[in-house]
Figure 1: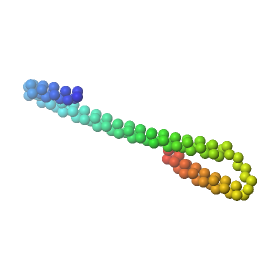
Figure 2: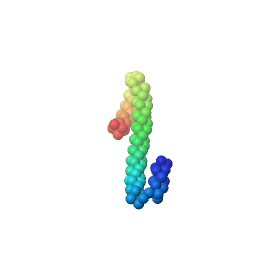
Figure 3: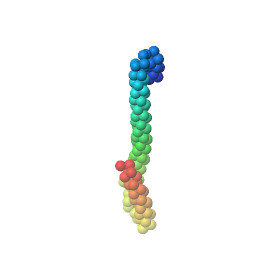
Length: 116
């Protein structure tokens, strides 16, 4: 709105001014409008960059939250467990379960590298 107001006043002054000053007013108005357009483009670029940064931050925060939840669940599941087995069948089941847990941890390792 302020720029529009300046342009309106400038046009009015141009019509009432002598030719020498009218051309100078016109040139200065053009330069002002060019500078304003440049500032607007910079502002749009900054806004886009900030939005991109915000999107990445939100995504990272979500990934970190999921990772924290997974680690907490794994700690509860494995660190507090008694790893004493009485039969070979129990031992075999535990080995298979730990292999699955290892695979899952390796998949999470890839995600951790991406997050890092």
